[in-house]
Image 1: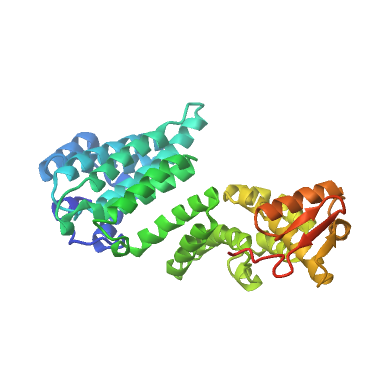
Image 2: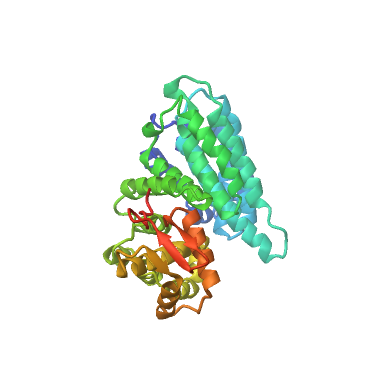
Length: 398
């Protein structure tokens, strides 16, 4: 870290730069704690060393960072967070006055560590029976970092806007962790407006993938499935080939979208990323039109789906399953266009579903017709569904 302050790294926007590696090596809490064990009056010595070797306020940044890592090594998360927040605030104050973006790597590292420490500090507060507050505090500090980058007016090459996306991604992680999704949309608009100055495609690909992943999840939760599919497919295509866990996280959100839009993953893909246990029966239920199998699969892996925020999305597959089952009935009696509701009732019973009254089946059919999944109308008097001869069951992807 001291090397980073005294000699800023070359202009680089890559989080894997040599300067970042130096920073990471200097902040190992175990090595720092063992080093300070042999220093008499370490607090005074540390302040003197930093003030003697580094200009203000970087001396405060260095001293607070060392204290944060010593506290982390001692498993004192609350103290570690407090010291690290002091370091970041001091750094941002100095970084704001510098007409250069060469220390963006340091900013991103400090912001990332603040997010992680805030979660651990809140866990420590909860354990002590106190109100958790550090995640919210970290969000305010990180927003100040976002403002410094986003509001910079320096020339393009030295503009701090190049680092805005990295800070936004950390804010996304924090807001999703704390279930504050409403805070994400203003950040999305800010990135869209920023593209008039810094093109999105010119930013590091890792930052692009992370941003599109969270925006894709927001689109999924908002019901904008084509947008979610496009963004998540971008993530799956451009994610590093060795990042298996990241591919798995993307697929957990992409598979429900594909199923809702009429596509389904292969069993080989599910097995490759160890998702067969959770999704195999759901995929089979959609293909076969089995409501009983869908409900069983959702109930069996309910905790997994809730944990990954896709349970409510998967519940919407109910209409897709009904549509596929009714289409199988229509195909079995084709070219007949007047379909008895009793046939649908028998098909549901054969699939192992609970008995449904004909009025309930009419309600399901009315919803499918309203949603465009079926082209036709219901004859209540004759208890029939009359479907279009041309295309009674149009594709889900339109």
